[in-house]
Length: 187
Image (cartoon, rainbow, N blue to C red; front, side, top):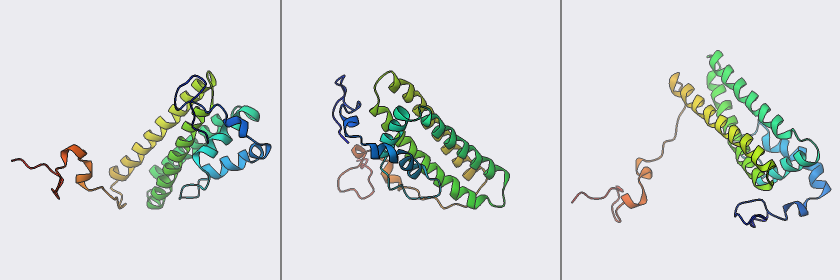
Protein backbone atom coordinates (compact mmCIF):
# COMPACT_ATOMS: atom_id res chain seq x y z
CA UNK A 1 0.00 0.00 0.00
CA UNK A 2 1.25 3.43 -0.85
CA UNK A 3 2.22 5.45 2.23
CA UNK A 4 2.34 8.85 0.57
CA UNK A 5 0.95 11.96 2.15
CA UNK A 6 -2.70 12.89 1.82
CA UNK A 7 -4.13 15.56 -0.42
CA UNK A 8 -4.02 17.85 2.60
CA UNK A 9 -0.27 17.26 2.89
CA UNK A 10 -0.52 15.49 6.25
CA UNK A 11 1.71 12.44 6.63
CA UNK A 12 -0.16 9.31 7.63
CA UNK A 13 -3.28 10.53 5.86
CA UNK A 14 -5.05 8.52 3.20
CA UNK A 15 -2.96 7.54 0.22
CA UNK A 16 -4.09 9.60 -2.73
CA UNK A 17 -4.00 6.70 -5.15
CA UNK A 18 -4.98 3.62 -3.13
CA UNK A 19 -8.42 3.45 -4.71
CA UNK A 20 -6.95 3.52 -8.23
CA UNK A 21 -5.47 0.06 -7.72
CA UNK A 22 -8.81 -1.50 -6.68
CA UNK A 23 -10.14 -4.24 -8.95
CA UNK A 24 -13.57 -5.80 -9.25
CA UNK A 25 -12.01 -9.04 -8.02
CA UNK A 26 -10.81 -7.30 -4.85
CA UNK A 27 -14.29 -5.91 -4.29
CA UNK A 28 -15.75 -9.35 -4.91
CA UNK A 29 -13.37 -10.91 -2.35
CA UNK A 30 -13.93 -8.22 0.30
CA UNK A 31 -16.44 -10.24 2.32
CA UNK A 32 -14.16 -13.32 2.34
CA UNK A 33 -11.19 -11.17 3.40
CA UNK A 34 -13.20 -9.66 6.28
CA UNK A 35 -14.41 -13.11 7.37
CA UNK A 36 -10.88 -14.54 7.29
CA UNK A 37 -9.43 -11.66 9.27
CA UNK A 38 -12.14 -11.73 11.95
CA UNK A 39 -12.46 -15.52 12.21
CA UNK A 40 -12.84 -16.34 15.87
CA UNK A 41 -11.59 -19.90 15.91
CA UNK A 42 -8.02 -19.30 14.74
CA UNK A 43 -5.47 -18.34 17.36
CA UNK A 44 -2.50 -17.28 15.23
CA UNK A 45 -2.76 -13.96 13.42
CA UNK A 46 -4.79 -14.32 10.24
CA UNK A 47 -3.10 -14.77 6.86
CA UNK A 48 -4.80 -11.54 5.76
CA UNK A 49 -2.84 -8.38 6.57
CA UNK A 50 -4.46 -5.51 8.49
CA UNK A 51 -4.00 -3.34 5.38
CA UNK A 52 -5.89 -5.79 3.14
CA UNK A 53 -8.60 -6.12 5.80
CA UNK A 54 -8.89 -2.32 6.00
CA UNK A 55 -9.22 -2.01 2.22
CA UNK A 56 -11.92 -4.70 2.24
CA UNK A 57 -13.88 -2.89 4.96
CA UNK A 58 -13.61 0.47 3.18
CA UNK A 59 -14.57 -1.04 -0.18
CA UNK A 60 -17.62 -2.78 1.30
CA UNK A 61 -18.55 0.38 3.19
CA UNK A 62 -18.28 2.64 0.14
CA UNK A 63 -19.59 0.29 -2.57
CA UNK A 64 -21.87 -2.34 -1.04
CA UNK A 65 -23.00 -1.85 2.56
CA UNK A 66 -22.49 1.40 4.46
CA UNK A 67 -23.25 -0.42 7.73
CA UNK A 68 -20.55 -3.09 7.46
CA UNK A 69 -18.35 -1.39 10.09
CA UNK A 70 -21.24 -1.03 12.54
CA UNK A 71 -22.19 -4.69 12.04
CA UNK A 72 -18.60 -5.81 12.59
CA UNK A 73 -18.27 -3.79 15.79
CA UNK A 74 -21.65 -5.03 17.08
CA UNK A 75 -20.67 -8.65 16.38
CA UNK A 76 -17.29 -8.25 18.10
CA UNK A 77 -18.89 -6.62 21.15
CA UNK A 78 -21.55 -9.33 21.36
CA UNK A 79 -18.87 -12.04 21.15
CA UNK A 80 -16.85 -10.35 23.92
CA UNK A 81 -19.82 -9.96 26.26
CA UNK A 82 -20.94 -13.56 25.62
CA UNK A 83 -17.50 -14.88 26.55
CA UNK A 84 -17.42 -12.76 29.72
CA UNK A 85 -20.87 -14.00 30.75
CA UNK A 86 -19.82 -17.62 30.22
CA UNK A 87 -16.73 -17.11 32.35
CA UNK A 88 -18.67 -15.53 35.18
CA UNK A 89 -21.48 -18.09 35.18
CA UNK A 90 -19.67 -21.35 34.55
CA UNK A 91 -16.90 -21.88 37.09
CA UNK A 92 -16.51 -25.56 36.09
CA UNK A 93 -15.34 -24.90 32.53
CA UNK A 94 -13.71 -21.62 33.37
CA UNK A 95 -10.14 -22.63 32.54
CA UNK A 96 -11.00 -23.56 28.95
CA UNK A 97 -13.12 -20.41 28.75
CA UNK A 98 -10.14 -18.33 29.82
CA UNK A 99 -8.11 -19.61 26.87
CA UNK A 100 -10.97 -18.91 24.47
CA UNK A 101 -11.45 -15.40 25.86
CA UNK A 102 -7.72 -14.66 25.73
CA UNK A 103 -7.57 -15.85 22.12
CA UNK A 104 -10.57 -13.69 21.23
CA UNK A 105 -9.00 -10.62 22.87
CA UNK A 106 -5.89 -11.09 20.73
CA UNK A 107 -8.08 -11.33 17.62
CA UNK A 108 -10.05 -8.28 18.75
CA UNK A 109 -6.78 -6.35 19.08
CA UNK A 110 -5.87 -7.36 15.50
CA UNK A 111 -9.28 -6.15 14.33
CA UNK A 112 -8.70 -2.80 16.08
CA UNK A 113 -5.37 -2.47 14.27
CA UNK A 114 -7.09 -3.09 10.95
CA UNK A 115 -9.87 -0.63 11.76
CA UNK A 116 -7.31 2.08 12.57
CA UNK A 117 -5.95 1.57 9.06
CA UNK A 118 -9.48 2.07 7.66
CA UNK A 119 -9.45 5.59 9.02
CA UNK A 120 -6.31 6.44 7.03
CA UNK A 121 -7.98 5.32 3.79
CA UNK A 122 -10.91 7.71 4.10
CA UNK A 123 -11.40 11.41 3.52
CA UNK A 124 -13.25 13.80 5.84
CA UNK A 125 -16.07 13.98 6.95
CA UNK A 126 -16.44 10.19 6.69
CA UNK A 127 -12.99 9.85 8.26
CA UNK A 128 -14.13 11.69 11.40
CA UNK A 129 -17.25 9.54 11.81
CA UNK A 130 -15.30 6.30 11.36
CA UNK A 131 -12.51 7.52 13.67
CA UNK A 132 -15.03 7.98 16.50
CA UNK A 133 -16.37 4.45 16.00
CA UNK A 134 -12.89 2.92 15.84
CA UNK A 135 -11.77 4.74 18.99
CA UNK A 136 -14.88 3.43 20.76
CA UNK A 137 -14.02 -0.09 19.62
CA UNK A 138 -10.47 0.26 20.93
CA UNK A 139 -11.68 1.63 24.28
CA UNK A 140 -14.06 -1.33 24.60
CA UNK A 141 -11.20 -3.71 23.78
CA UNK A 142 -9.12 -2.18 26.59
CA UNK A 143 -12.08 -2.54 28.97
CA UNK A 144 -12.35 -6.22 28.04
CA UNK A 145 -8.62 -6.69 28.61
CA UNK A 146 -9.13 -5.23 32.09
CA UNK A 147 -12.07 -7.58 32.65
CA UNK A 148 -9.87 -10.48 31.57
CA UNK A 149 -7.17 -9.52 34.04
CA UNK A 150 -9.67 -9.09 36.86
CA UNK A 151 -11.17 -12.50 36.12
CA UNK A 152 -7.73 -14.10 36.12
CA UNK A 153 -6.57 -12.52 39.34
CA UNK A 154 -9.90 -11.95 41.06
CA UNK A 155 -10.87 -15.60 40.90
CA UNK A 156 -7.38 -16.96 41.51
CA UNK A 157 -7.35 -18.94 38.28
CA UNK A 158 -4.26 -20.95 37.61
CA UNK A 159 -3.07 -19.60 34.27
CA UNK A 160 0.68 -19.34 33.79
CA UNK A 161 1.74 -15.80 33.00
CA UNK A 162 5.03 -14.89 31.38
CA UNK A 163 6.37 -11.76 33.02
CA UNK A 164 9.20 -9.73 31.49
CA UNK A 165 12.41 -9.36 33.43
CA UNK A 166 12.35 -6.40 35.78
CA UNK A 167 15.38 -4.91 34.01
CA UNK A 168 13.34 -4.58 30.82
CA UNK A 169 11.25 -1.90 32.52
CA UNK A 170 14.25 0.37 32.98
CA UNK A 171 14.75 3.17 30.52
CA UNK A 172 17.92 2.88 28.41
CA UNK A 173 19.35 5.94 30.19
CA UNK A 174 19.06 4.18 33.56
CA UNK A 175 21.27 1.30 32.40
CA UNK A 176 25.00 1.78 32.84
CA UNK A 177 27.26 0.21 30.18
CA UNK A 178 29.02 -2.92 31.40
CA UNK A 179 26.66 -3.33 34.32
CA UNK A 180 24.98 -6.72 34.02
CA UNK A 181 22.24 -5.77 36.48
CA UNK A 182 21.16 -2.83 34.37
CA UNK A 183 21.32 -0.40 37.30
CA UNK A 184 23.61 2.62 37.59
CA UNK A 185 26.10 2.34 40.34
CA UNK A 186 25.49 4.58 43.33
CA UNK A 187 29.14 5.65 43.73
